[in-house]
Amino acid sequence: TLTVQLAESSHTFASYRERWEAEVGPVVRPILERGLSVSAVDYLNAQQTIAGFRTRFAEVFTQCDALLAPSTPCPAPPIGQELSLIHI
Image (cartoon, rainbow, N blue to C red; front, side, top):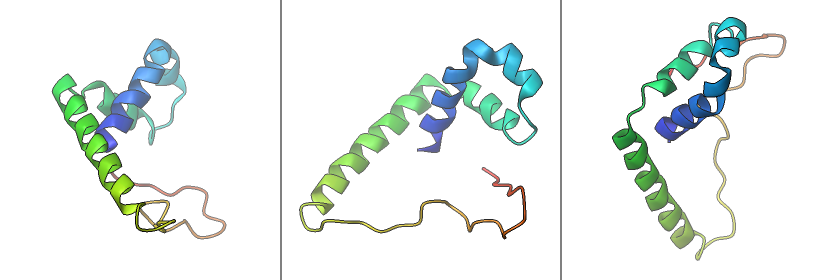
């Protein structure tokens, strides 16, 4: 879930915080800062949600060999466009 992704990204960069605060752009900085505020309860609830998804997917794959789905939550930017903002 997004909660886990935010928390784990911020955890990964925590030891480099002084550096990334100076070097990370205005799109990524708020994402990393948001991850620093994820509570332990929210993180553990999200991990339980993920465990439930794994169980359900395992059940689905007993009946099929592949699951096709979009790989991103939004369309790709047009060719030539350098930046695509995703608001979370």
